[in-house]
Length: 97
Image (tube, rainbow, N blue to C red; front, side, top):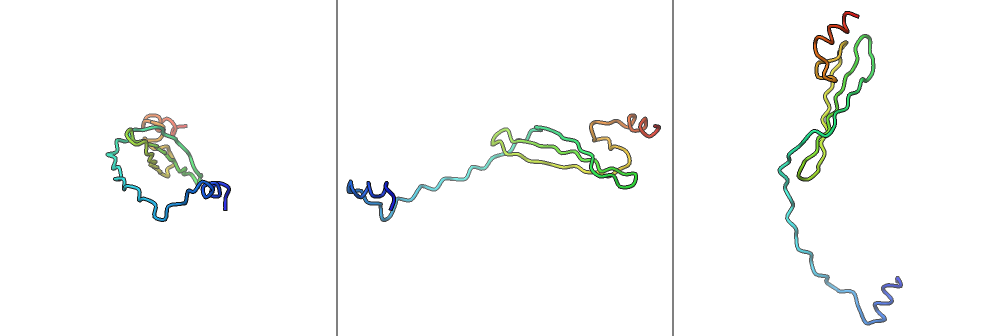
């Protein structure tokens, strides 16, 4: 028996046989309002003449601070338009090199 329990018995305090039940709390349902927190860009693996391009967007809810991550992935020889905001003109310049 722990020292704390022994002291309770010494003072005539006994643990409750049936402790009172805690009131049930309603689960909070958030109406999420996600905002973009950060975007990361990665280039993974070269196979032949293609590269796998990834954009990893992380969003957070402004009400409950829940985080959500979305990954967009594409394999291509040239960077897609969504990758680091490359325009088609920049891709054409890269192809000419």
